[in-house]
Length: 600
Image (tube, rainbow, N blue to C red):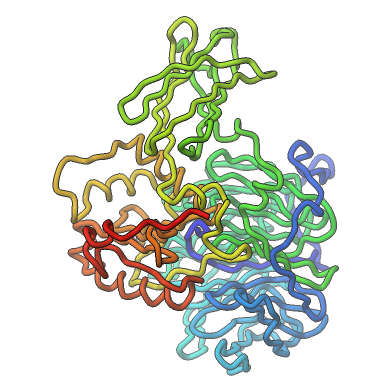
């Protein structure tokens, strides 16, 4: 999720503001080329759904069964259904601006004309209140968290905290001048100051600013997710990555989209940026690089909701939805983006790139690649593999700048592999896992879910956080495996093997062949259980659902609560007719004795 599954905080987006933005002095105007090396035409993206919207849609707000957008010139907000792909309601709001957010059963929509915040009941789609708080700027953002709504409300530097129970002002917090966008995540409120080039951090327990974080020039829009806070900086068109625990900027990523407007979102293992004429830029969280950029008309607001990217385009009067994984299928990223770097001679510099494979398929040739980076690597390499206790060596063959070796394994599980030079120097051992799902589903010959299916938002289970099983949570996931309530002997998996499993889980989620989640503590430091939704291996069932908890999860009473929530969620939101809960609805011995499903 989330899709990484992370806190979903709608932030604003959008059209260039009529008022000037104060920026730090620059020697010369910054060009707007984007990143040409990874650019492709927008026509390469085929949407799964297209929603016609009255007026010029801009900001987006996401909910479990609803997506909203606004049209300032038309004085409307529109509601879209993510399951039927239809626009189901329009609600009059005078000059809706400065973002949208869904919270406490209502849509919160600031109005620049009336200087209030509309509250629209998401059950009836009717206006139920107008909160007398004015947005600080038409191009900003509104947030929800800690039981309150947070809105920058004065360009001189103020955030108003609104109590949803009373629609009254709970606090007014002084922040840096020129602060227009707020987001909530990791237990804090994050507010960007376009004028002062920093992010203020508000602690909701005290309503005090506890940190001011310098970032790149003119930050405006922000996103929370994938373990970090992100700012889109309009001065140079860059993105700043903020560690929410240390409250420091840890990276600045060049995206090449300076200027007014734009938007940013986080999810599905990536950060997504939109800007006029470069509507989609994808940044890989792990490598901090722009991997894909699509050029053409469009670019107003962008959001990620459980597997799908949503993109509004005011000039075309529509909103698009497309699977995040389709970008990787349409324009595959280079294998070198996620490759491991090996220092073979110990001088501190990388000598060899080794492909870090996400998954392999039994019975199918698996290609491994390496690329020498220095003369220390040489020109002769061998692939050493171990699968289920059997070892093999395969020579690499040169293919342009790369060297390739093909290995075919017949039995599933983990391939441990190393790339070694002719002199016997080897890169670190890596692990890649095979799918645990039926092979015909893993290879895409049989569909597990409908083509346009978007994984629904997980249920709320106390203060726990759902996160897609992926390598970014390796440490808490491996500890959870050690702490499982049903583990009786020594661990049957190593840390390296779990890394291979998490790569495989992430790949399956992106390709919709299986869906796996970790249940984390509120601070994301501890995993207390897992939920797996897989295609069935037994006849008569569409899918299987398995879940388990750790000893800490059991002590917290998580198991029965999680099971109840997952059963209701799968029944209501997933496209399956017959679902089995092996080990819960029937003993595993009985399940294992059932006849196998036939491959399509």
